Image 1 (tube, one colour):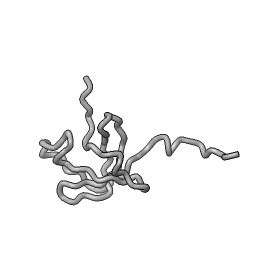
Image 2: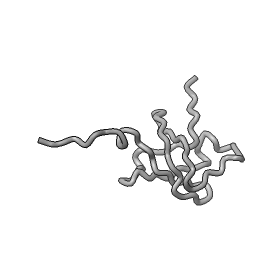
Image 3: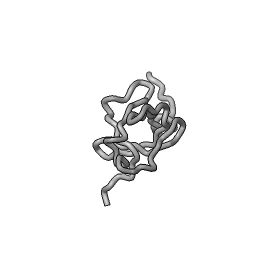
Image 4: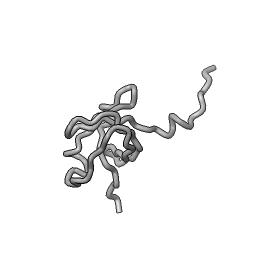
Length: 84
């Protein structure tokens, strides 16, 4: 089954340097889920057009718009590389 279980869909081209991106609930996989009410500090699963899922923390909610900060595991676990 290739259906994503993501809560929101984000556009990777819209991600800011702070890893924050705004998503629309109305264009999400959960658009018809009346119980879906993301609030700041909630952790959600988000996906891009290629189906790459990431966890994200809700930082702002304004009606249909939800701003989330992506949690990128590679950035958390990658060692600092030294340039020579």
